[in-house]
Length: 70
View 1: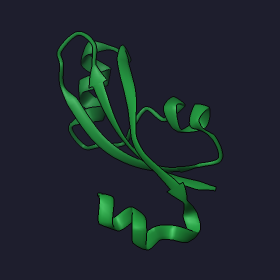
View 2: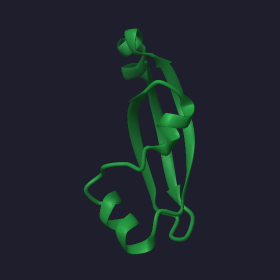
View 3: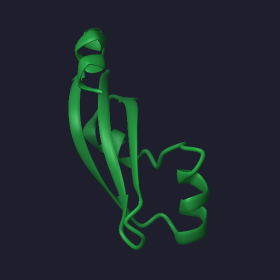
């Protein structure tokens, strides 16, 4: 398992969402749509048309390193 720090950008509105996700692969992390209180209603209103940029990845054992980046 790895920890991912990502930024998701809505392609229509430009709204950004910073998120973290624990996943087994990059593909699994990118599939994550997000759970933010403002992000989820935004996706419902404008659609799930967003891009994902992975900012940082580290093994789950290195939580201390992950915290220093986020």
